[in-house]
Length: 343
Image (cartoon, rainbow, N blue to C red):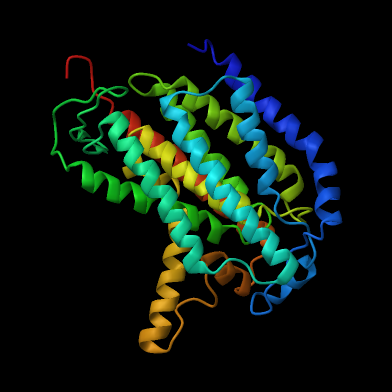
């Protein structure tokens, strides 16, 4: 057992230090490779000044998280799947970032979704089989039946939903969260900051869970430190962009962390910004196809506020505030649902 939280702080600080130290030479490498961001002409005009800013910064985040997970020996059943998703989806994102930077055309959307689905199905089946999850922990109600072979002991309150249904929900959560973070990654610091608050929430949940999940908490702490180090270079005006290599992989990883901690039902609350970004995109496309009219000035949601006259920094900070408050509310719901002794 990791005692007194010292190792969690060490992991966070070391990850931050690694990012701050390694990012400058990594940026020089990206520039040498010609990894400049290609800005879409149909996006907000204010973004054209960002043309050529190095992208694929997520590769360094993934490398630091995986490397420090080895250093702190943070591998067990609770962390294999999140790190697997981080690596595999990160590889997909890196290829897409490379193709976008070199040709302006990345991997086709359907092919990215297919790869995400394959990874998500493999992980969902593994998690269900390994932990024996057949249901969900519901806020305020308690533990909707999990017949768990290891890990979280659940009460018998609630309704068992079955392995297949759990796997379907898990796949939707992984793919949806992955793409939700990717859509959010449209302003300097926006995705990175909201991810920090989400991972902080699940770090607290891992430490309060029954039983505790110290290695999962450690991986969260390392990820938080790496994201904070990345934000040092990504806040406005950004010196580097996360790219799909970071956004897709970290979004998928966040969903798996929620699944393994038994809190997938509060993931949409903790990740409310990602949900709103996806919802705005779906509403915009659906409305335009059915009615020929747009609901928002531009989707996803942060562009709507940009075209409404909000400064980029104001949008980012306000979205961070919403993300932080949602994270606190999510942790509160989790604590309210912890079974009482003898209950």
